[in-house]
Length: 503
Image 1 (cartoon, rainbow, N blue to C red):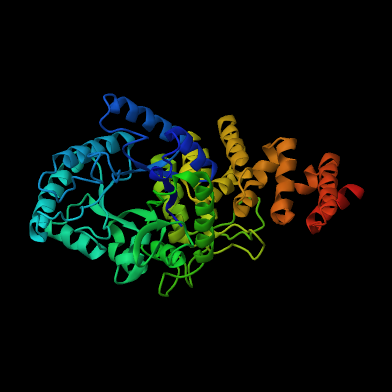
Image 2: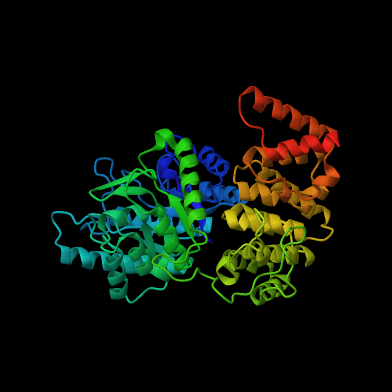
């Protein structure tokens, strides 16, 4: 998986923007889909530019990717939702708004500006609407190109551009503007796409710039939490892997702000579970997994892991290491593509063993450290990465020989973050040789007990024999007593920790 999970701020309208970002990061999101307008960033405020510059600095500090969304309901007319649109006779306010959105996106270094056509009004024919839309999109695309911003046209049920096929036909009529791609809302596919979500994503292919994620039922354009509609989320994620999508996948629940924190948590759980179910599957509809298949060379093992070493690293990994040694700015793109280039197969049959892409990413991190790169590069790789990329960073810390002080500090910050998570594979990756050598006793002991609590075998913990002490045994005994008092079984590994002290 090489995309980044995000969440739309239109689902957090009861939270100030900084608080919304705090909640999203707490639940592990690495991106935000920012809907311009009340209450988060008013594009027409007198100080809009200063606000945007401050937000850009905050997003960089947080390591969050950002997509600019333009679907605020009553921003342009307090009486008419979404009006005027690009297919109204008079669209001046909409054009001004979208131009401002492009300026904001340039300051934020956003992935794209997402926009849609609009519902054809009663006083405009379909043919007239097409002409109006084409003229205005050409103007916006030119302005966006001059600003270095990508546009992503979203098909919407009931609008002039309703399906991916409609969007592709429009793009062709416009002469295939290079900076005009597509947004696909997975839920919309349930409602309007003849070939369903898989067909829509395959049709969008390399032009896909932005994905909105939600559930829907076929008869209603109503954004629902996952599991409440008929979206095949597993098939959608398999299709995204198949087309090598590397952008943002942002949850879109604009009518659920009243339960935003809980839905952010539940949505992340649903997305991660679906991603894990489909991680080893082939492309939607069959075939070999991207980057895998028979004969794919396996990357070299991660130092300190239980995976068997292989004498020769994957050729792609060798090239990637050489590239980042000379240009650290290449690391994010290489990190994102590692899975499809070297595969995602585990390097051994041991539980929670590193995978081939873990090893490739670990080699990249070690090369960055060895070449004297700023550790902020790796902090950003972790903060902006998906679950697999974060694991790769953690495995990479294990691969650094004698990390200098700034890298040790950065590594300890990342280990602490991973140990706050409940992602078992992330926690397992955090307790490698770097943690064994540099994590303080208190944090390390709690990390070991977290493994027991989450059902992670203690075989993943590097240096357990050397670092286990009386205090860890006492903590294990107290935990066991609590489990017995609650009538719950004592995990076998916990018994082993206590037995270690008795010995």
